[in-house]
Length: 408
Image (cartoon, rainbow, N blue to C red; front, side, top):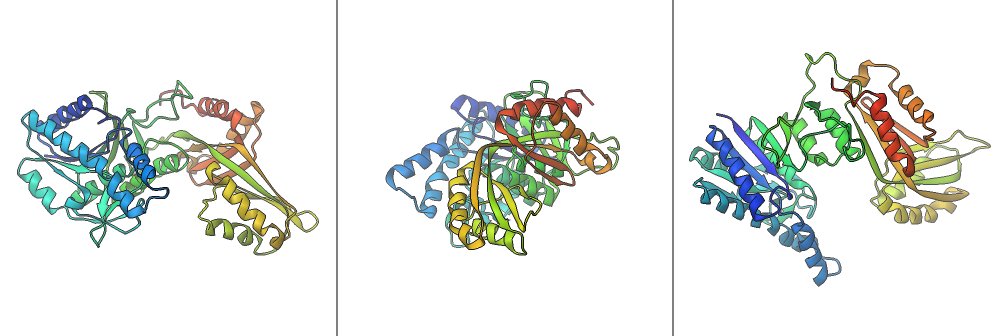
C-alpha cells in the first residue's frame, strides 16, 4: 500500500464538473489500494475575486484580515470535493489548514510552514478515509489564519508529503509535465520524463511557471519524490522530479530553457571606482525591498565606471527614485533605465562535465544578430539579458542548437 499526496490546482477544480472529475480520479487511486491525501487550491479565479472584494472595501487591506478572506476560497473547494466523493460512495474528510494544524510563522500573506501535526490525518487514512486538505493556508502560534503566498498550495502538498513520509507527491496541473521550454513559444518542445531538483529549482526561479519555487525547495530538502501530471489526461507518467542519480550516466548537457519578460535594466553612469561603491548603490535598493537579479560593472576608465543591474519591471520606478536620491551622494553622473529587456536561461546538470556550453550559446545568439547585454552564470545555468523583441527567436534557436527538439 502506497501513501500518495495529490495536489490539484485552480483550473483542475474550476467548476462542479471538474470537481466531480477529480473525485473520480482520486477514488480510483484509493480503489487500487493506496492511501490518498488530496490538497486543493481555490476554484480558478476565486482568489482574485476575493482580493478584489477586499480592495473594494479597503484601499490597503490589513494583512491579517486579508488572510481571513482569501483563505475561504480553498475552504469551499475542500467541502465540495468531499461532497462529490461522498456522492460516489467514498469516505472522505475535509480539513482547513488550521484544523490540520499546519503551523506557520506570522508573516501574513507570505507565511512559511514550521510544522505539521500529521497524527489526525494518519488516523483518518487508517479508517479508510480520503483526506482533503485546503492548500495555501495555515495558522500561526496565536491561532491567526495565515496564507502562504500565491501558488502556496504546491508547498502545502509537498510539506504534507514530507510530514507523512509519503511515497510520492503528485502535482496535478493544466500541463502534463515539465517541458524543455514553453510549447507556446517552441512547438517542438518535449516533455521530460525526469528532471533533477537542482534543474527544476533553476527553471522555477528563472521564469518557468510549472511549480512554485518554494515547493521545489521543500521537496529537495526533504527528498520528497515529486511528479507533475495533467488533471485533464487519464494516461501519462508526467515528469518525475528527483535527486540526481549516478546511474544516469549520459545526462543531456541542457535539460531546459527558461525565459522571463519581466526584466528592466538600470545603469548608474560615471560612478567613482572605489571600494564600497556597490554597497552604496545596492544597499538603499535592498532597503526599499527591491530584488536585484543580474549585476555587471564595467572596466574603470579615468577612475569612474558604469554599474548596471536588473530588477522586475514593477520595481523599476521605485528603484529609479532610490538611485536618483543617492546619485549626488555617490558622485554618479546619471541614472538611465531600459524596460525593454528579457532574460533567457539555459539549465542543465550536464554543464558540469561539458566544456564549451557558454560559447555555443553565445555563438548561436550572435549568428542571429542578437546582442547580449548582461551575463550571469552558476554551476548548472547560464542567463543572458537581451532586448525583449528577440526573446522568442532566442529561445527557438537555442532550443534547436542544444538538440532539445530531438528525443534522447
